[in-house]
Image (cartoon, rainbow, N blue to C red; front, side, top):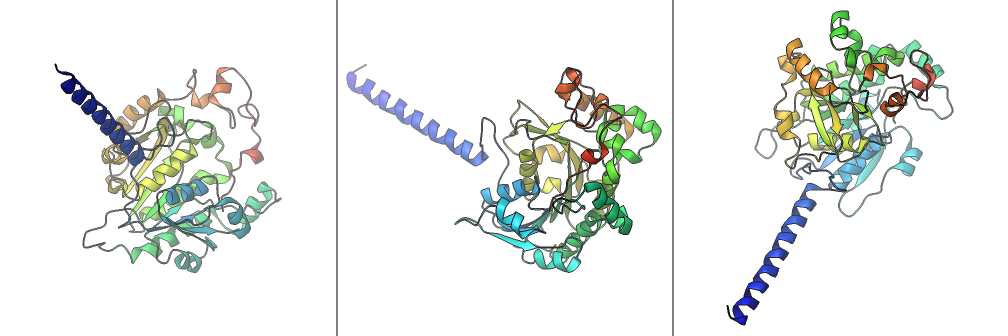
Length: 381
């Protein structure tokens, strides 16, 4: 070949390499990756999700939800009880999106309705317990439940009020039927297990005999379960996500593994929980469904997002999966447990899988002797 042809071919190869590099960077940017794996979940469509209210916005997960929304250019209404805490924790408005902090009593229907006015959807990340600085958590809970039964907890009241606030807005959007969730609830894996029959608990001991279910401090799981049911009965478009054990040391950007029937046990980073909650806003496959999720470290999330995985799950109207279906899911999920012993039922509250492998005692004491006060759920606001 002539020198001219070789030079032209080299120029063409360099050009093609630049094009490939540009395409690769574009894919990474579209996926929203922040680390080796990052989030491959799609950003909300501005046409349908422009402003989102977050209940419990200054909590450990709620604050991450606010950050995730704003990173995607979505305006946020942060519903909080403590304005000073909000100033310390929450980000400020930017050129791309705004944040409005509103003091809100989550047991007040008027406060909630006023706070979500003009919002396209809401994400519930709150708990029903007071977090007054310096107050003893036991005394707080005893005082609260001396007045309120779990049926009348802030969760049960607030979630219902939030659903009612969006019922009138569940109409057609831009001429098309809107099948997206208007209320996304952050719940917890294990909420139904305290009420399982003894036979079912024995059948699924690996998830029924774990610390949070065995102790169920102050009936927190029952409170969440009742709140879920109120949301299902509200007639609003909803989605309920029950993450497994929240662990900030578990790698973020891990692949979520979803299941139904409340048989999931494992770990997930709060950042991934926030990402999933926000992604649900534009995932119609999540609407009308309750599902659990843990994260599989070392595997990146699917490029197409969570829609395909959630499309395989059944709507809540189909009822609880049969024991045969649950057994298949349970047996698979048990193989994904962290640690070497992979025995969640042997854990003490506050003990890690790694500590169990080394026969070390967890931060709350031996199994069956855990410190109940320290095990109490910490509130969001």
